[in-house]
Length: 256
Image (cartoon, rainbow, N blue to C red):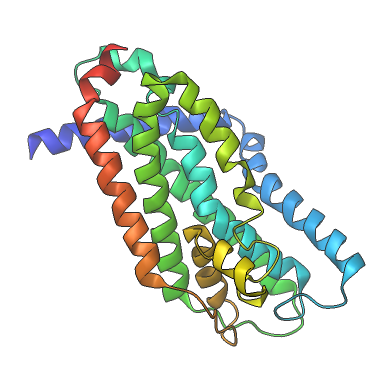
């Protein structure tokens, strides 16, 4: 218990340090966390409103794109932040009480809380401005958030090791994952695509996560092709590989 209490105190201190480093001491530092999704949602809404009269779901372009973008961000923002958890706190690892896993845990907690607050703020504002009420269902939202965060955590644990040991891998990873924004169903419905294109998109577990996230705001959306077992199998696989690599190489992470 004392060992866990020590780690809890270290993680809490690291969370406060990360908050100060990332957002600064002034409230304005937190605005960027909201401005990034708002700018993307506004841009997509303006572009597609000029092309189409109605969104693929419902009547609100901002709500449709917000559910896609924010659902995706529960993976993307967390994965990008976790990848540099150890390298960004290298100096702190000289202290015996700070373990490499503590830096990952601190960033995981901070990013989950940040993305959740942003989601509540942005989606809540959009829902309140609509002329018709929106029936929000929490279970699919929470499940999508959990699955996305576990895939990001597993990938982050693995990438922390691989980025440190193989610098070329970091560059290759950035190139390979760059199209994720386009193939995750953010601004379209994967189940509305023709056969082969649909199969390709649904190979991406993030597309399933975005589909499930949308069902929390659109009860009429059937999300044809969504496979919860596939999503959680990918999440479990990522966590297993990530924990295996991180545990095996934790001594190297501290020394490098």
